Image (cartoon, rainbow, N blue to C red; front, side, top):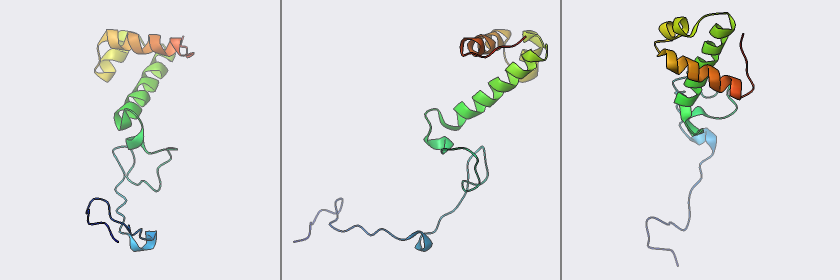
Length: 100
């Protein structure tokens, strides 16, 4: 006897990929999911795309500090407060990074 409940059908059809329309729209980081270099989907990571964007920004901030830029110069360039730049650099040192 088949179930009458529409939310729990007895048989679920699983279509083969070649019969499924897939629109590869990518995300904010990369225009195509199929050509994305990340090992996992940014939208499935806790914090998502925003976390990846902030991580990249912080790497650029640390690189500027390594080149000898002051926190004030870096803050001006990135549109941040001096305190935010100091915090990012401090967190980088705590995580094993360093800068001159």
